[in-house]
Length: 290
Ligand code: GLU
Image 1 (cartoon, helix red, strand yellow):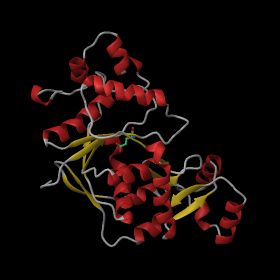
Image 2 (cartoon, helix red, strand yellow; image 1 turned 180 degrees about the vertical axis):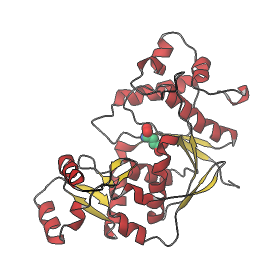
Image 3 (cartoon, rainbow, N blue to C red; image 1 turned 60 degrees about the vertical axis):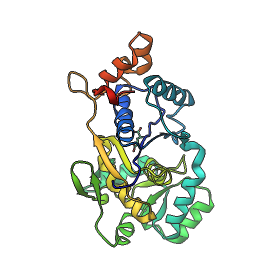
């Protein structure tokens, strides 16, 4: 990446204790930074108050420190920055790229079931666009009445605003084309939280100067949408390195609910940090290990 200092990050959501899959991901980002003499950041993606808990944040910090996966600078905790995300939403709204959506999950499920061919995207069935068709007067009226609403990206308008096709640079693979239309009118601000994963992750990667986004390949489809948001907002384009997901001997993905694999449990049962890293698929050269 030329003279640019490499900046990577690990961005867990504190919905549980760290498991081996997380360690694999954290070490992947840590090594990419440390090998290049770059910076490794830690960000806590905790905007969902129903699923995230402060004690899990504490436990994540403690486990990473115990493993020797040290991070640079302060930890960014997303829930403390909702105003930043609001500013981004306002900028997109000012360009008519967002609209309020009053639909409940049941409304959407009904519409989808009634339609002959409901297209699906990476996050499930695409939103059928019900609230995109509301008149400005009805929108204003329902908002004035305080009706709960999400904010959705108007995908067609967003794509029409582009001047060139979207792509991203995947380490080792070269440039890959993006097709964000697969997400349809994706939610950028939820009803219960004035933000969303896609909005916050792209905002923060730009704000924190992340040059190489590393994460599991399960999130690779999201990169298409992230490149769209970056382009709409005029944010810099990071490179990407999506890694394989860690699986057990049976080939099953290690899930958070797999208690046996939490780092906390391994530590308590006397397993050392080097052995945890080994089980997380962090293969030496030893010089790379903490
Ligand atoms: N917070 C996301 C997660 O825990 C990861 C975000 C990312 O790396 O882009 O799945």
